[in-house]
Image (cartoon, rainbow, N blue to C red; front, side, top):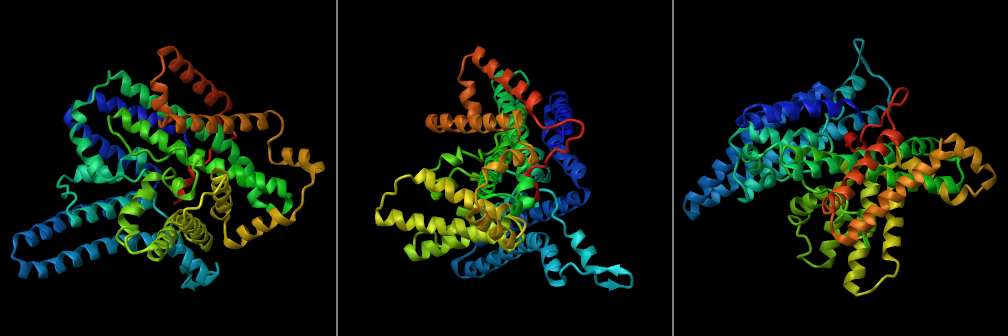
Length: 493
């Protein structure tokens, strides 16, 4: 989290409302590229190349599709093969690029086991692995590009002829780093309406401000504070007893939620300032009563993308329960592999696949399980251990320690000080987690997210909430000299 972003955002917002309204799409497009280049110049080059490829491929695909429709049935079969062949090529190219960046460095390290191979003084594996470091936002805009081409092929949308519009769709800076994953039919039409956005819309700006404040609270007050303890516990789990290992797993469960949901709220708030509505990515996920319900609430844009572009094309639940279970496991394995290279990510995905299969079988049998919400939470916490660990071996060691390390209360005070949660720090952590979970409970009951719920309150109540959030961020937020702010967790994916 860098405090430079609000400054950058302020400059863009000022220009957005000062420049002629017809310049707004171009401004957001250029600002997005500046933002990407500011983070990673190499990532900007990849973004530009992928955007140009997707833009041209979409136009070509639409032309082939329209020609197919305009010809007679006999020739149409040949054209169908041509269209299918082109979309396979285009999507396949994007998938290959994503896989090379996602797994290239990991495979090189696996093959050479980290040992340098000198080629005339040039250490090949290390140099190649360094060049294959993940460009910023690649996983997110690649899925958008793939979905965009798939929708053109299916006839759900047309190709965007304006490169600035398509480039803004792929690169819009508030959601570039960690999503949400947008659909072109939800975003592109909004660019046409940017001329109607007025600065004086107090309702829109108030809602945007609430989204951003709540996002910064979740990130800076809760997630970054938890990160200090989580990092130490996962770095040396063998030095902690079972209680602290369980606490570390719970803390990470809250950290990744507050980190990722915090980013999503900030992104949505930024979008609303420009009059752009981004998809809601989280719906009180830890209130879920089953794994199926959890994935309707967690990273909603990813789970819906996997459903529409992978699960349903595989056959979904249309070919019997056995095929449904196989398709479910495949989808979650892909989900795990999308998150990162390493067997532990695949195991994390496989665990959720197994949970979902059991969920489907229980539902089909008509059984009712008591305590479904607690069971779901425990399943999710357990799976997060594999997600957080650096390898499968570390994850298994961590899990083993939970059951074998024992409990030593006499050392808890010393351990608390070692992991920096003694005294007031512990109180801030407990209160921060309690606030987040309580707000989620309230929002789940009202079927509204927190910023929308706040907007329904009277002005006095709404301003009081703003004041409390600002005070909490400035007093309890993790920032300032001597503190290295944690980057958003999902930036690495």
